[in-house]
Image (cartoon, rainbow, N blue to C red; front, side, top):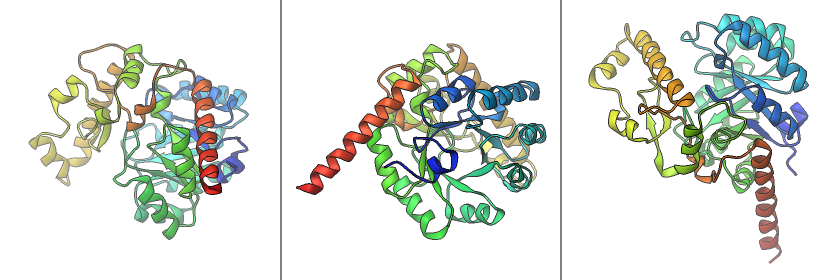
Length: 329
């Protein structure tokens, strides 16, 4: 009953992508996803060198039977993009998710290799652009997403995309339960991309403090900050985040809008913000910036990827059974 474009295209059991998470996703997590019937994606920028990235692609091709994806930042801020594309041409994954830029070059170079191109979008206008360029599916980033979230709720965005585009829609954000998975598929999504609930897993290569934060904080503790990358990003409202605020100061805001300076300001903001996130991810620090989405509300303990996916399936079955019972009445 969970057969969708996503499961059929990649020959997996569950219509779930383990979302690409900066600094968090790694080979171990993607291999666990493969073992448990779904498919994972890793940001290329999680690897410090192209040599490390290439070694990871070789390992994943061997242990995941090719069933994995890579997330590419496709704008000028990613100085490693050309190197990443060359490696992916040599070791093609099942799919690539493009973010924060035009997927045109990625489509041109990787589709002939059999790679499916899925594009992050937050609105209909951009969805139509990537459709014309030849994208295979849309990653509909909604307001419940962790990291760079979109402005619209899934219940609005998914029907809008279906009305104006022909591509399959994968919903990204807000799903942390089996009932949430069921409701998102009922909207017409062909799958979901889930990230935040998998942060607090044994397989995630981050500090215990970060994992504990995912368990101890909830949906009401998530705030949007543009101080991390220059683009609104969802983070946990720790004491440090509250202290520094969530908006750029007057000078940063002014320079970000200046035609000449904004590219360089955004690159500097992104660099500084990502360094802060990196420090917090791997070590306890008073300058704590933890990226997460509101679906951490449903995380009760640090667990294995296997146990989390089994819980989601059980909850999905119970929610479906409840609906069937109500219909019979």
